Length: 319
Image (cartoon, rainbow, N blue to C red; front, side, top):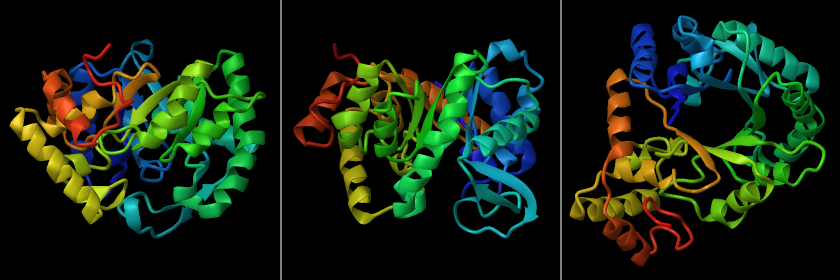
């Protein structure tokens, strides 16, 4: 299990500095050694906070990933929405080779480190850019993809891929002959709530090519924990109703939905890691405990019988 740092960029709320740092320290103290971040998370804020803590640790003892595709500038910009409480700095979208190299250097400085393990091309997808995502993907294909592929071949990074909230960009990238990704981060798409599309092509294609998938957003922005957001937006009524049905089944089997969500995302052979986020220190222990919770096979069978999970989904304990 890894730690996703999007919440540390003040996603949805303003997090006091010490609380954010204590959350990273709690993850470290309880054995977490993989940390994922991005310049987009708070316009550099999450990277800075993560760097403050990890710079005090032995660099050989943890794995670190960040993303490219957005440059944080010194120009002021008032922001609303997902990261309304972020640094008020202008963020520019750019997937070119030059911007990719600059982004990596900026991230190294914010993270106070001399190297990265994995780098993901961030949000080249329809949910952020509408139909324009296709031209941006092409810019990334001839820019960021080539830079990262070269860095991997030179041994500068261990792997690279896409970090997106939809499956199609990863599927397209896995079909490339020149620069196929080796490790991608799929957020919100292989979860207890939604996984059918991922199982159709993304996961089989990853297995076929030998690529790995990191599952981000396993709680679908907190929806599976009783929150008001689903995939970074207001939760729809139909999703809320589905969760209510799942919750009743979980209660009947003495299972927490948090544990079910985490453990559902782990058994697929293409999955390399699952990285839930947290913005409070006490949440780390809760997540680790949920990962170890015993879940009876009858619970998963009930979900299958009611068509709440795919018959093709591999569940914990299945062979």
